[in-house]
Length: 453
Image 1 (cartoon, rainbow, N blue to C red):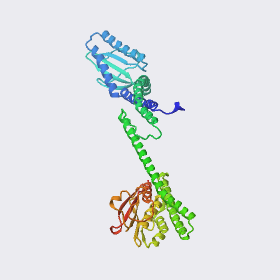
Image 2 (cartoon, rainbow, N blue to C red; image 1 turned 90 degrees about the vertical axis):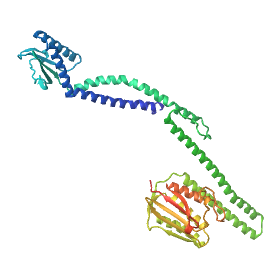
Image 3 (tube, rainbow, N blue to C red; image 1 turned 45 degrees about the vertical axis):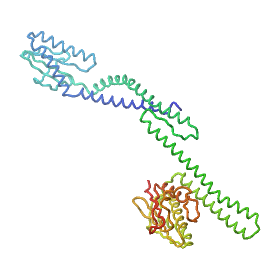
Image 4 (spheres, rainbow, N blue to C red; image 1 turned 90 degrees about the horizontal axis):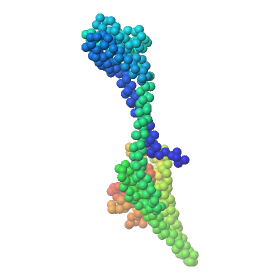
């Protein structure tokens, strides 16, 4: 349901709730600490007692002094009752001889005791008090303040603080909601611009957002569109090149089929059959390589499969050995007896088949092809070196392009083998590079295969 889908505005609103709860807890902790800080409470009690004592210190009349203390006691206890504070403030006034002149009626028959100039604790009528005593020339004053329970303090402060936070919440929420809503408008405009693009329109968005936070998004979208344009252009060229490469063998097949139909000369028929077979083999090889490249390019990368890579390499070279023997090529392998590693087996087989197959095709009769496999760091290094004609330096950056074929040789091929190697190496999170060959002649293709991720 649309109404139940999460939205950024709703998420920000809900995020404020735990934020406010955290603020409530912090403020409650601070207020509770202040309300239970004995040093601060004793200081407040000391200040209250000193002020009351100062107000009666110059009075000679006992009645007047008693009236001031009684009025102060009544005022404080009225405030306690009004605010539902449990307990009462007790005040006791004595003259210089120690006779009691006044004691707060809330204290009953209790009596206050404390050392002069100090605040100490006392238990009166089952409740804990902090007691102050101050002495003047004519009077001695004792003031006892009740120690409030932690539960009452939490309940009292929590209620008032909760009301304050509830009042503040909408005033905090409103500007944030407005800011988020306004901040999302450029994103909505960007979305509208993307929706308005046609199915074949991969041009850059050309959108310059007002907020810096959105610029990485628009830049990433423009890069993605550029990558799609490049990919489509490459695929378009690929289809054109594939069609061009297939056109030649198919034209040969058509021409030789016409010869077979029209001629009665046995020699011409044999030659036509030979040419037709070569064209069909070339077309079949090209289609096989196109399918291999498409499979490597577009299939999801499978999970690495643990295997003995040295044994796998020996098996692949055994399949290619007849071609080497037929041309008297020295095909050698340098590898450990056992080399376990986890990788995409199909991609590795494609690399070996194409690199060694290319070397066997391009190296002159009686040449050398040297294959080396070794551990490097946490990955593998596979090199295929030969002493063939090599590749000119200006062309070395082009040999991995699709359908690129060098000149000056008659080896069959469609120019896809090294493109397949590069794609397979990327699939293995590795890379392929081209170096000088054996004794400075020919080529060495080095494939670095990274450790499984």
